[in-house]
Image 1 (spheres, rainbow, N blue to C red):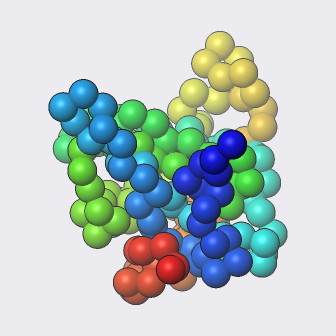
Image 2: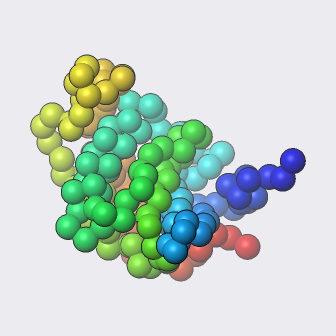
Length: 159
């Protein structure tokens, strides 16, 4: 069986950043999948499920309400390894194209206070597994350490 694309990336050399994972045709459109890598795989602790779940709720809410991208968002959700998130957009995009959107989303997550959208028994299958404080912290860390002065090597997978 062939390895899937995400298993062909050298996770030993991968650093936090925003990478184009793949581009797939879908009818007359292209679907671009982004790897939003928040932690260094196999090098630092993974994010706990509560903060990952909170980032997922906040990120999906932000993206699906964004005035420009809301109709282009197919999916935003966590990687199973808990080192980051996938974002699927309708359109042929580069990491540079969406950098302002990702910065804006992580600023929203960093600054969010109050009740997490969808964190209720009616709206979510595991609504108690949330940690807003850690989600705020991790968003700030990603902004400060990666997104603020991002370098080209954090926008293209290592070769």
